[in-house]
Length: 57
Image (cartoon, rainbow, N blue to C red):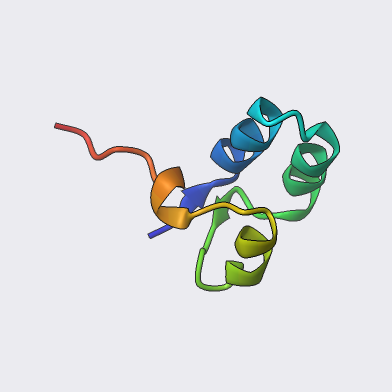
């Protein structure tokens, strides 16, 4: 499971965390591996399950 970097940045912007969103866009790859970045996601109070796009029907 990978998470789109843009999805993470969007959630942060919705929370008013512009600087963190900008940093995410500069530093993380386009597709983020939650296992590799588990600490960062926890620090940002983001649950990977909430960030994964809904599967196509």
